[in-house]
Length: 141
Image (cartoon, rainbow, N blue to C red; front, side):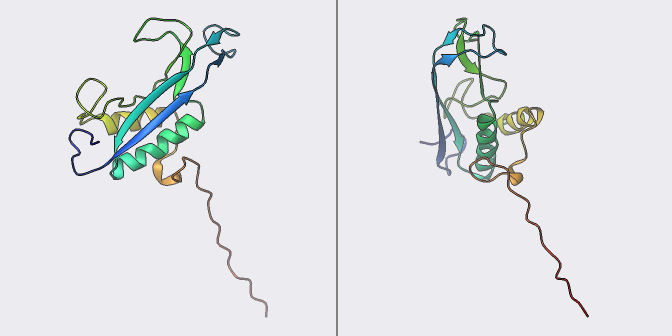
């Protein structure tokens, strides 16, 4: 499986599985049930893709990837839907597939707007890297 336009790279496949649940106070219909959602996204396994997947993991872990509301695709209410961070849900042609020369810049811009840390500040699991402190040896006379 290759993302169109990235023939020399393998593909990172992101499988999301959201369980059904009860809407929270900040959703459209608090207390009302919503169905779960299965979604798959694709990235080329190159430096840009690996950096982006770190940021997408952080976004997911912090509740920024999905929300509950009215589906823009079906018009159905009380659905688990994508939030404001775009994903490529096809590895090739189409509106939601590759190639898309602006995808990495656009998606990183959306992540920046959501205050997601830069990839160099995250580990491979999307967790913030802890700063290491160095101590200066103390010498006594």
